[in-house]
Amino acid sequence: MDVEPTTIEAPEDEVDATPRVNGRSRHLRIDPRVTLLDALRDHFGLTGTKKGCDRGECGACTVHIDGRRALSCLTLAVMADGRDITTIEGLTEGDQLHPVQAAFIEHDAFQCGFCTPGQIMSAVACIREGHAGSDDEIREFMSGNLCRCAAYPQIVAAVRAAAAATGI
Amino acid sequence: MQSFAYERAATLAQAIGAAAEPDTMVIAGGTELLNWMKDGITAPRRLVDLNGLSGLDGVAVDDRGLKIGALARMSDLAEHPAIRRDWPAVSQALLQSASAQIRTMASIGGNLMQRTRCPYFRAEVDLPCNRRRPGSGCAALAGEDRSAAIFGWTEQCVATHPSDVAVALAALNAVVHVDGPGGPRAIPVTDLHPLPGHGAVRETVLEPGELITAITVPAAAAARRSHYLKLRERASYEFALVAAAVGLDLDGAVIREARIALGGVAAKPWRLRKTEEALRGLTLADGPALRRALDAGFAEARPLRRNGFKVELAKRAVIRALQIAGDVA
Image 1 (tube, rainbow over the protein chains, first blue to last red):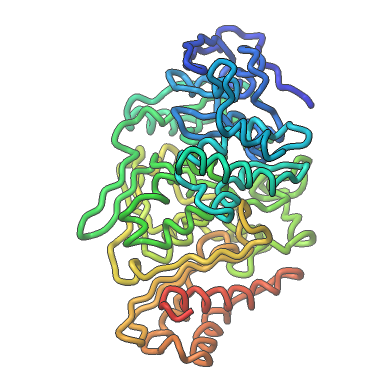
Image 2 (cartoon, each protein chain N blue to C red):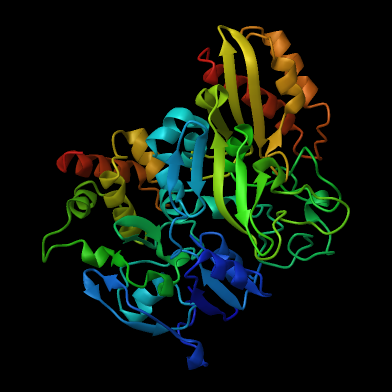
């Protein structure tokens, strides 16, 4: 997959941004064209967030911005200045998996794993939003995350189990 | 993507001044604009970020109606208790739009500024499209027209407008408030997107530098009893083939007032005014009379080669939406 260049020749066009990534302030001086997705992967080395379609269609790049799920491929990195960004790397507490991560393993909710970080970030938000009340509701509010392996039944089961475990 | 300068607008006046300059575009949620820029549909030299503008993301409700700031996000509006109660079709249309991620990002003002999903407009290779490249022709006219318009098209363009919430807003007589170099003005949602004519195809009636600041929706019995029905080829995360937004004011079982707007059938939300007039005084139980009222509104429909199914589908969608709104489904 082609990765768009994240540096340019004309440094005078660069802009500053300081997002807080997984709780830590990180400074960027970048071309304004750089998406949050490319900044996370190429500038910060946080490659858990995946680049699928790069058009906002597949959900593989889902992160949380100020606690809400968002597509990092459709967010300019400069527009993340001052915002709280949480990626899949920021979900764990030390060695302790997040309950949604544990539920995905327990329910075998992936095959190739490429969509999984986005699925999990979306699922954490879905549960927090109170939209994991039934299988139909989970399917509707997780529809922005595609899985080419079609692990959908297991994903729904994992989200349902994680929602039940967290008492929502 | 062509390189651009990025700046943040501190005031609305500053944003208007910047937006009036050539090669400048404004960005809010970015869910449409970034894709246009990645695909080469548009290539601004300057982007002006509106997200720091204060006072443009609120929701206010009073006796006269609803006022939505242009920067309010789709997900917040969809879940707003007053909108769900008094303008349910607006909430329903929003919840059936895009995905949860896109809804938390996209602004309501930007939603109305969406451009068509016609495959020729969005094509990765250069194909004739008068919206994409003025004067290049319309490939859909002789090509894939299944998703195209059945009302109000010309040889210049047969595209449909993709917004769901615009259809609900059109049925509920919403007004778009803009501000610009010439001062503020108000535009009915149904007048925001011009139909194609025989010359250049325009996306909206906005002038350079004009920005949407708010949307107002009047309070009405027909708004409280409203419903949005979306028909699409997937259960979720798909644009409408046909959608119907309806509002009903009932006197017992008799229709005092009906409002109907269709999505997926024209370059703008399409009000079925003749049907609305014909429905006055009827009851929802009178199936044959409802059909006749629908036929009146579709007299001017002109389906293309492969989208004739939209005529019958849209008629049935309206009847079903009326029945749901009238609690007789």
